[in-house]
Image (cartoon, rainbow, N blue to C red; front, top):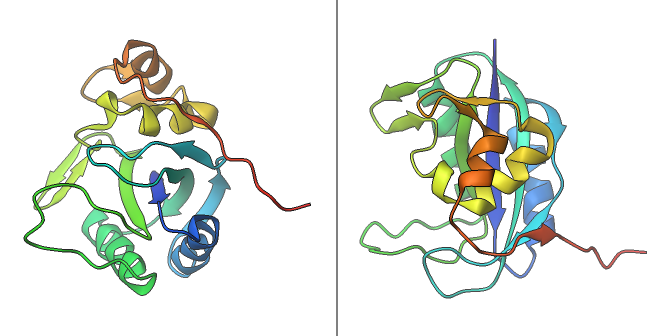
Length: 165
């Protein structure tokens, strides 16, 4: 059994609900062992509403291709429509990325771990560093916390403030 770090993201009007629904549905096949805080971040690579992002640590038994297929199914169940002709990033109700796993580097078909652009994205590194700062990047040979200190992405990241009483 491996530990995996998944990044959830949504910039839909109901993003907090979308994140909660994603956890519930993911948990049908993935054993979630820890959920990070919810972080608000600007859209990256396009103009759009801010995203809410959250890291989940989970146990996974099986091939990573099956995990990614499940993640894509969860996105679809939660209303994600992928535009195969899109040439840029788009708004989405749910995005699920596999960022790191306890098995190191992995490259088979369309599954690439660590996520190939994680080290240039503060919106990935900052939430990861909250609880998983000591995880090693298997290619960069440094920790998530070290990658965060080197990251040149200057987008502001802050904890999401809920309006619930």
